[in-house]
Amino acid sequence: MKTKKYISTGIIKKNIEVSPDLFVMEIEESKISINARPGQFVNVKLREKGYDPLLRIPLGVHGLTKKGFSLMYKVVGEGTRILSSKKPKEAIDVLGPIGNGFEVQEKTKNAHAVVVAGGCGFPPLAFLAKELKKKKIRTTFLMGASGEEHIRCSLPLSGKGTDLYIATDDGSIGEKGTSVDLLKNILKKEDKEETVIYSCGPEKMLESISSVAKKHKIKAQVSVEEYMACGIGACKGCAIKTKNGIKLVCKDGPVFMADELY
Amino acid sequence: MNLKIDIGGVKFKNPVWTASGTFGHGEVFEEFFDINKLGAIVTKTITLREREGNQSPRVVETPSGMLNAIGLENTGVAGFVSDTVPFLNKLKTKIVISVAGSTEKELEECVIELLKNYIPDAIELNLSCPNVQHKGAKARLFSQDADTVKNIVKKIKKRAKNKCLIISKITPNVTDIAEIAKAAEKGGSDAVSLVNTYLGMKIDINKKKPFLGNIQGGLSGPAIKPMAVRAVWEVRKNVTIPIIGMGGIMTGDDAVEFILAGANAVQVGTANFVDPTATEKVITGIEAYMKRQKIKTITALQGKAH
Image (cartoon, rainbow over all chains, first blue to last red; front, side):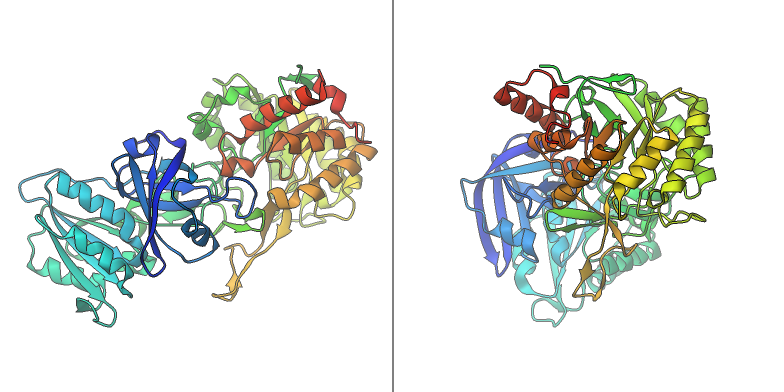
């Protein structure tokens, strides 16, 4: 499903460090937020003037707010560091919404959404979880992370209709293991007919999820990332190999069926 | 204010063109502005046969610029004719088709096949992409050798039979770019376009490996502008054919620099990745400059800094 893209100047309402190096930015604007769907992303301009950095950075839409949308990002390099230094009331230039987004399943009698998040893959899945809740689809949210930063952010998602399970590498919070371990356990006890898996996270995690899904004959949608330049399908920078030929993460993705990739 | 220019008898509504590989064929930019406002659209390079392109990562940012090693991914001339030509035929601006080949023969065959099915306003010979291997050639890139350029252009001009302009896009990865431009002129090129990207690399110090899948790539963006302006300046001193200048143009003022250095037209590339409406802003930026300077026609600025 194609969405029209906008170059929109929003106003930063909040830019808060919710956990060490993990920020949530709320942006007030009306063109992108009206059309954004879970799994889509935006390309954020870091400098109003000047060329360092030059290119925009792609970030998954984390959610919708009353008058705009939110982004959740970890400070991992120069671009995200600059983003973290922006203050409320500052203008910010954003291009989006970009990409296809997740295809949210129909609300059938036994519809079950299994959302598997690994570390930095959490933000777009938080958006998805809220959408699933709106559609009243029973959701199992599996959160795996090496540290507690994203985990704390996943806690508000649990509630009526959404079961949350957590796994950490050292077992300090939740189970000891990975989100893939959680997935294997969940699927053991579930009737899989109307189950769809949605996932975002490190590539190795997505590959493992794909084999688990294949084994249980469940459809899995994965959101991938690749270094990109234009974000709109012109430069062919973000090309990836799929079973159906070369595809662009920005234009044909970022969400692909797992069995198309792995 | 008159922004019209003439290259080899073909009239362009203004001197702002898109750089090959940065604009696709224009489709994905239509939702941002009216692309018919452009002087010309130079399309992503096509080759005789389909190409998958290079291994990822294909792009990475560098100070005030970026490296790309896309590798001329394209559906081949046959795919281009069936998938893209119908779209191009609906546009109301000049169309320049960029063509490349890993051998001279392939390049020639691609031009022949293209012209059998579609006559553009110009063909831009990509003699300078650093992300492919030119097999059996004297140099790694065709436009690193003057004789090669002269001979290729001569052959292509013969094949094209004046159906469209032939523009030679040359590489700055040479000792003397003016020498190469002169060779293109001797071969009969209607114009030269420069610069293609500069060879460059970035190393990931955490993985201790080159960043790009293809290891080396082409540098573009504001970082290369001073070198590109200088290249246009040198070529202007040495050829009489029109020059299309490019290399880090982000604004109308940048474009004016190239025109003053001797360019008849300019191409805007990397800027499109930062702002999809960049080319439109370059046009209005040139108009604003002309208004400030009380200049009525763009041609009055060509080469004026010499």
